[in-house]
Amino acid sequence: MIKRKLNVFLLPMLALLLILAACGAKPAEPTATQAASQQTESTTEAATPATESVTLTISAAASLTDALNDIQKTYEAANPNVKLEFNFGASGALQQQIDQGAPADLFLSASTKNMQALLDAGLVEEKQEKNWLTNTLVVVVPKDAEAKVTKIDDLTGDLVKHVAIGIPDSVPAGKYAQEALTNAGLWDSLQDKMVQGKDVRQVLQYTETGNADAGFVYKTDALTSDQVQVAFDVETSSYSPINYPIGIVKATEHQEAAQAFYDYLQTSEALDVLTGYGFSVAQ
Image 1 (tube, rainbow, N blue to C red):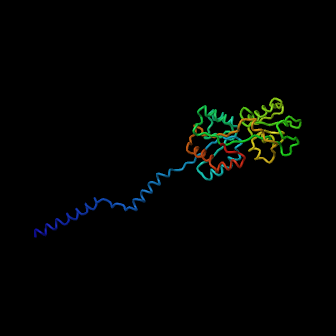
Image 2: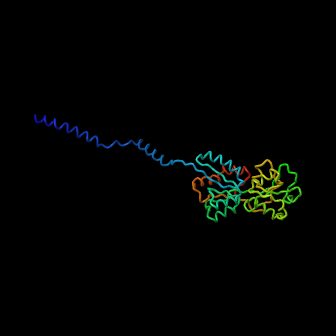
């Protein structure tokens, strides 16, 4: 009788202990496959940050307009999170803008002088600047020109009323033209005929429209127009080498994106586009 009472008392107690033990049991360890899957998901999340849209402002010499517009299409298609905005103009004017604090991520100059000024001012990092391209100077005339111009001395002829060049103080092409004319002994004698453009593209436009009978432009500009013809190549020994340096502006707020585009401009893909427009790769 006593034994039966004890069993009645102990059985509920034993059942309660079993329930408590089950509640405190550790959860089952994940299998090796489950663990690997969880680790992969965690790693993927950490290695794939949110992609932010970036707009890069590139101050570039006017003579690069057509080539860079082509490069822009290819680059933005491959990098949909990056938008390229070009500020085309005379290298001297662009240099002054950057010097005065205008926003720019990269500077693509048609003159080492203008790039050097920014290097000296500490606005471009030396390790992120290099000579990139070269160009040559030519004289163009309207497609239907009456005046026969085949050499630099022909610019003094009576049929040549106006000769267009870029403003020498701010337009590298104009400075190179000034050097060539000075070395030919013609700079002073042609002053009455001079028409100055704000950049090399305006010089080309003056010649296309007949507002100038001849114009000093880069070979690359001449190749973009079917309204002018090259009268002659200017003797390369008569002007300074035409180098196009590129650099990343220190003040950029998009260092990684700026570096990526700077590097891309030096790839064979980008250089093939540029050489197709008549540029040569700097050695």
